[in-house]
Image (tube, rainbow, N blue to C red):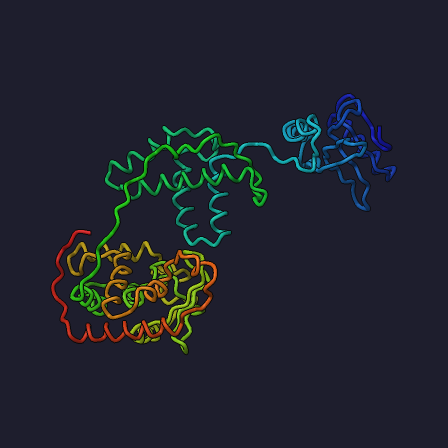
Length: 424
C-alpha cells in the first residue's frame, strides 16, 4: 500500500466526509482507495489540503511495470461516488485488466446520432467546407426523425429507407438523394473517426456498417442547358428592369453571375475584403475546390460592382431577412425559379449560367484553358496539379477583355425577345 493511502472495504459518503474533516484538521493529504488489496489498479479519492478548502479528486490508479500512474476522472462531490465507480468500471477496469496504460483510456460510451452528426458537421467546418451550414440544417431534421439520443450504431438501413421514401413519393427526388448523401457521408466519417488519431471527438461510435451504403442514389442527369444570345439578353434586361418587386441585391447578384461565370455561392458571399477596386479583381482565399482563386472581372461587371454600396457588414449582396449575413445560394435559386415559372425570363438554373459563360465566352474567342482558369475548374493533369504555379493573370485579363467586348456588343445589337419555355 502506498504511503498516505487508506484502504477500506468500500468507500461510503460517510467515510469520505470523515476523511475530509481529518484532512482539514491535520492539513495532510490522504488517498482513499475504494476497496481492499493493491492488485494492478483501483479507484482512488485524493484529498489535498488547500489554504481555504480541501480538494477531492477521483483518480483511476494503476500499477504498471512497477510504477504508479494516475488519471483524473472527476471532482467530488460534483461527481458522486456512484458515478465515479461507474466511470471507472466502464472506461478503466478493462484497460487495467489488459495491462494497457490508463493514459490512453477514453470515454468508451458509443456515440449517439446527435454526436455523430455534430462531429461530422464540425469536421466540415474545420476543413473550411462552405457546405457545413446547409449540411447541419439537413442533419438536424434527420436527427429529429431518427432520434437524437439513440446510439448511431443501432440505426438500421430500413429506417433510412422509410425516412427517404415519403420525400421521394412527393416528387422531391433531388431532396431524397440529398438526405441519403448526408446520412451516408456522416456515417462514413464516423466509421473512420474511431481510428483517426487527429480526431478529438469524445465519442467512439463503433459503427459496424454504413446503413445508407446499400441505398441506391438517384441517377445523375448531366445538364446541357445554356442560354442562347437572345436568351442571355432577355434575362439581363429583365434583371435591369424587372416587372415585379424584387430585392435589388438579388438582381445585381444574378447579373454579376452572368458576367463573371463564377460559382453562385462565391458571388452570393462577395465581401468588401474580396474586392480589389483598383485592380478590378475578386480574390477568394478559399473556394469549393479548396484552392485560392483570383479573377479579373470584365469592365461591365466592375462598373456594376462599383455601383453597389456594401452594407455595414461588408456584404455586397446581403440577405433580405438578416443583413448581417449574405444572401444564400438557395435563395437566389428560388428567386430565379419563381420568375422563370411566371414565364418572364428564360428557363435557367444557376449552373446553366456557368455553362452559358463557358459556351458564349468560347464563341467570343476565349481559349478553353483560360475559360477553365477563369471559372476555377480543377485541372487534373500532373503539370497543372503539381508543378505549374503561374497565376495566369495576364491571360485571364485578356480573356475577360474579349468577353466584355462580346457582351457589350450583344447587349447593344440584340433586342430582348419574349422567353420561350424550354426543358432543362
